[in-house]
Structure formats: C-alpha cells, structure tokens
View 1: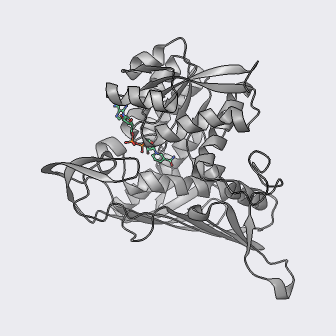
View 2: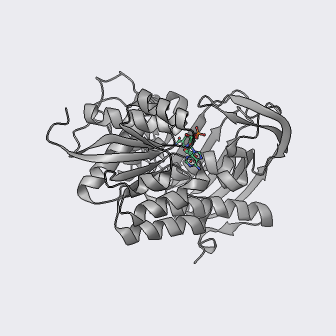
View 3: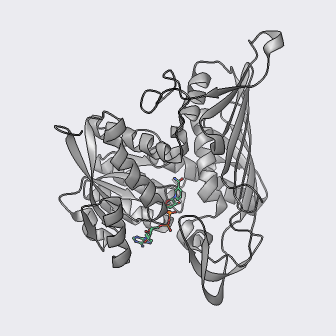
Length: 392
Ligand SMILES: NC(=O)c1ccc[n+]([C@@H]2O[C@H](COP(=O)([O-])OP(=O)(O)OC[C@H]3O[C@@H](n4cnc5c(N)ncnc54)[C@H](O)[C@@H]3O)[C@@H](O)[C@H]2O)c1
C-alpha cells in the first residue's frame, strides 16, 4: 500500500485513550489517503513497562521506550506525538523541537499562555512542523459548515452558541483523577472541553475579542484514584484530595467581527455524554451540529422558497463534501475515530510540504489566551479583553 512512499517514523508518548485514537489513525492513513509521506509506528513510551509493552503489541508499535527523553533523542524518530497529560506537553514539545522533530500535541496545548508561547517559540526556532489535536474541526460536517460560511451562504455572522456537556463526574465518590488537579491539567472542564468549542468557534466564526465567565466546582473533595478510557473511575484509596479545577464553566464572548457568543461546558449535565454542539446564525442562514450525530449538518437558508423554509438535514457523506471521496459511498457514515485520521493525514501532508496545518501551535496559543481570559474574568468579575492576556 505504502510502497515507494517516504516514511515518517512516529514516537508517541502516552498510550491510553488518545494513544489508542492516534495509533489507530496512523494505521488507517495509508489505507484511506494517498499522502506523499506515510507514518510508521516506530516507538511508544510511557511509565509503566508492562502497560507500554502490552499497548505496543496490541496497537502495532515496533519498539518501546521507558523514558520520553530518550525517545525524543532517538535518530530513528521523525515525529513526536504527545498524548500524555497536559502538564507534560511543554517539556516534551520543547525538547522535541530542539531535537528537530515534528510535533503533534494533544489539547489543550499547555497549562498557561506563557507556556504555550514558549512552545510556539521553540517550534518556530527549530523550523519543525507542528499541530494541536483539535480533532472536531475534521468532522466532514464541520468542514462543510466552514465552506458554507466562507462562501457567504450565511452572510454576516451574528451569533454562535456552543456547548460541550458531559455527566461522568456527578457521583461524589468518583475519584480525583488527573483531570481534576490544576497542577496536571491547567484548568478543568474549561480547558478540557472548553478548548474544543473555542477551537470550533475560532475556526468557524473568527477571533475572540473579549469574554466574561463564571465557573463552579460543585464537589470540592474526592477519594484518590484513576480512570480508564471509558471515563470509568477506579477509587484506589479512602484518602481524599482537593479538587483544584472547575466542574463547569460558562462564558459570554464578543468576536472581532462583531458576532456574539454563548459557551457552556460541564461534567455535571445529567444525560449528556458528549454534548458537543453548536449553532451559528447569520443574516442569510444558520447551521447546527451535534457531535453525537456528527455526519449531519442542519442548515437553514433564507433564500429557500417561502413554503420550504426550515432547517434541512444534510448528511455530509456525498462526494461533494469534505473528505467525501476518502471513505464510503454517500450515506455510509463515519465516526469519532475518523476525525483523528483526517487530522493526522493533514499532518502528513504538512510534513511533505514543510508547513504546519491549522490548528497548529499558533492556534494553541490563541486558544490558551481565551481560556486564560475566562479564568481572569471569573476572578475579577469583569469582562476581559483577549489582547490583555498575552504575556508579552
Ligand atoms: N482530542 C480529544 O478529543 C481528546 C480526548 C481525550 C484526551 N485528550 C487529551 O489527550 C491527552 C491525554 O489524555 P488521555 O485521555 O489519553 O489520558 P489518559 O490518562 O487516558 O492517558 C495518559 C497517558 O499518558 C501517560 N503518562 C502520564 N504521565 C506521564 C508522564 N509524566 N510521562 C510520560 N507518560 C505519561 C500515561 O501512562 C497514559 O498512557 C491530554 O492532553 C488530554 O487533554 C484529547
């Protein structure tokens, strides 16, 4: 399949939920895409030797490395893929850039704007290709929404309304996993889920100009423990620890182009599992998308005949749709994992052309600025201008 193609050798750090998503995507890229360079699963790294070896065998990695510092220095690695918790991203990315490796990093890019900016400086200095894994941009229906907006089908954009709602944290007995510790995650539901809908809004609507937010931690202490890739918690001790991040956050936003935004993220929205949804209203039309039904884009166009006006459901699997020729005949839907295949295929194209496709570390910095502005607004009780957040 990949005969005669240039190979890029991937070294991946972390092997659980996102490790699985990325490993699967690399294996599928040469199957579905005709990229000039193809990924090779060269080495995988983590802290627990048995766990890493098991993951390497199951997911098809050629070798294992117990210390990411060694992985980053290896001559037989071209790309470092960071799928470990947020507090590890900066150190790994900066070391990888210094070693001349291209980098794909999971979101949110960093723990702070300052850290994200250092990462951007490092990749710029090294001249390596970089991306941040905001995979939802790569759902064909989201890409099609972008096309409609770019073609002016919706006209001037007035509103964006976006949520990312989950409910896995509602049991007070759920353990204090790394996502609930500020030193490891940076921020809680805001950074984890909010960074995704901020990315979607930046992609579809434009740059944020100011925000006003609120956040709440409903349950302040939890027993110590871990979670699996299905978000099932495992309590490991009766000892309790403090939750140092938000359980839920909401914020209002103004955009540079004059649009208004309303955003809400929560892990306490009973019945919502992955309620990643948006609606965008423009002068000539509107679009709606829901990740749990991700192949469909709901489109309203004011130009429709009077009797036919209404939201139509467009199943974005036609050959005319983004990525429509990559997978199956129309109506044969794709799923969550394909967002990663599409994103990492763009990374392969970026490497062959020597450019960093969006979303890249520059997008990661801008995303982090919005997250930090929301946090500042929560502390001060005031609107915060995004340009005031830049640490320089
Ligand atoms: N794009 C998405 O939709 C999405 C979804 C989930 C998670 N994420 C992001 O992916 C990253 C990983 O999340 P996850 O859900 O896969 O986490 P996870 O807890 O399932 O896996 C983390 C992995 O990192 C390894 N690890 C932990 N600390 C490490 C260290 N100090 N050095 C080396 N390896 C270490 C662990 O052994 C494990 O393999 C986070 O940044 C998270 O925000 C993104």
